[in-house]
Image (cartoon, rainbow, N blue to C red; front, side):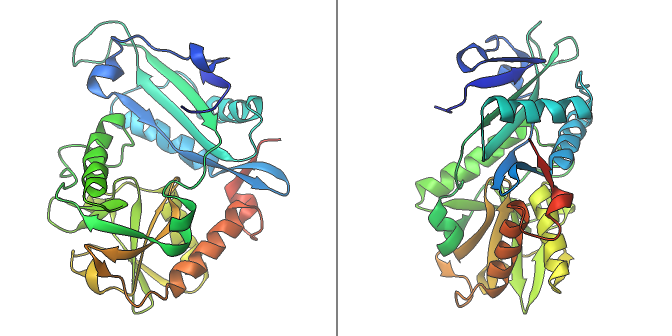
Length: 304
């Protein structure tokens, strides 16, 4: 069970056990929700939210793709997130804002159902485990592919889209891996179940583009900027599956996963295990989010 005291719901902070929705809410039956995952980091200046504005902007963009109007401004949601963090006395953790179609009538057409918004925040450690950040994880290429571009919109971080992610993750776990990598509808590499992907080859960093049915990750964008600042060439392009087997380094990125190295794909070791580029980017990233980087002020929103 998630350990949090207060959850923001439609403008009010309510007790954890009172943050309920009706069983006939549209979202329960049709997956009509739009959400974000945001990290809260402990810094010397106090708790800091990583790229708050960018996350809230993407929340509104996801809803817009599905013709859904969130009944608050971006600024109101940003303040509500800060309020939720503070009322729960968090120094570090995870934040989940979600907008969803609530209860009025049942049917695929959502337009008559209200749009409700909730925000929860709680203490949460490494998504794939602390050891994964240092030693890396084992992944498999999933038998489940990401939807084609004209089937489900990959740019929307929508609840229904993550049924695909569940299949990818469950398959990987059942086969003894920590994570799965999905291919796109053309057979090129797309992303993990909940992470973007980067390949290092001959000191060049390669990542799938948006046309590979990958989410426009905010951590991904941060990594690209940090890598370029370090002098690395970063290219967004289609990645054939076999490049995963012959690359020098491979790592996953995301709000939850942060920067997680991969040490084998389909039981084939990744490179020689040096991870020089991955470690350099990890250091820059964790310096950034903990307020120790020259760019920290641009990326962090302090809550107090």
